[in-house]
Length: 152
Image (cartoon, rainbow, N blue to C red; front, top):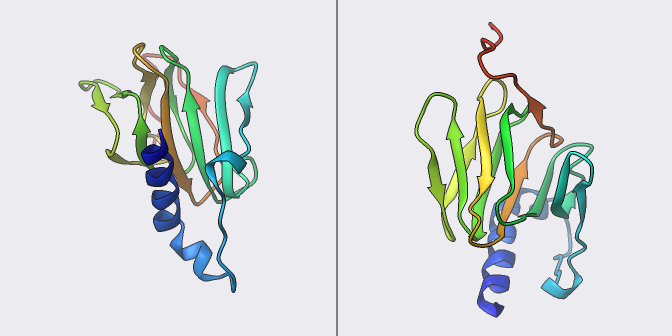
């Protein structure tokens, strides 16, 4: 558990280097001081988020996210691209019409924003914890299966 916390804090520091470089003093947040909140208790019960910098609801951010074991989201998109590093559990993503991708601790994913349609889930064996960074606010736009993507 302790090594996971060290890894998580190290990854957050590396991925958010551009934000930290703009500050004149270092920022240290021990794992015990990370503030977890509900992402969306109605639409995503059990999903927790902990903003490390920025505000995931308003704009650019870096945050830890926890998905409960067995959690699943049907076909959807996001407005903004996300960079993700997986810390624990097995995260499962299935791009529309393609085979699922399973990612475990230490894996990295860059997920495009816009019309990238996919499903997301966490394997039922254990919760999934990951660090996520984005240049814009987090959102989730459900897509009805079979609907054609919007034309650009």
